[in-house]
Image (cartoon, rainbow, N blue to C red; front, top):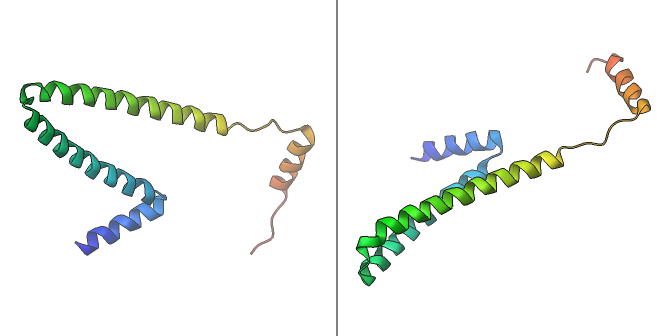
Length: 105
């Protein structure tokens, strides 16, 4: 089992996604705990007949909020990537740097 976690952390470290992985793992276990708590509440209140309807509607709302969040994040990322246009002087300076041969290390 130790090899599994070591290899998983190496993969995540290479892609800089270790915090995202652990946040998703924590969210998964949080949703499992929330489901267990909701099941016990429905059983205690005697609403077993309505449990399926509630869970289906909650899943639809969760998916809708997830899609909206992803779309907003993509729009924000696109807005942040915009750069100011380069002046003619900056363009020629960059072209000169690209054409210039760099010394061997």
